[in-house]
Image (tube, rainbow, N blue to C red; front, side, top):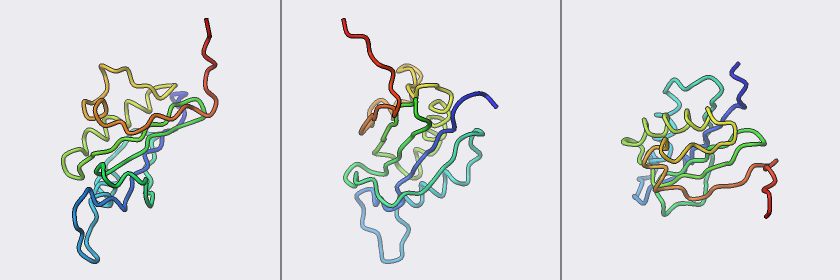
Length: 130
């Protein structure tokens, strides 16, 4: 065990990525989830489907979270075919942090431009006020 808290990748499977989906057709979010679920991820990373992240106008959306001391991130504008490697690499980098903050220069470019929200940890460090 590496001493790091497990990390979760939550993928919205209801996402249509702004496209029309035929009755019974595969939604882009579900396709993204299936592609990631089939990949071998670092130990300590789990992938789960979620019903809706209410970010429908911003492409496929995901959440990265893990442990009480990590920041949680919501990323959007992901494409089910072209952003799989970016997402796998990004969640691996996230898992390797203690606080959930991937150093800016190490973040995948997509993460730099498509962060929807950053949520403080449950047990945040108390900032010093000067």
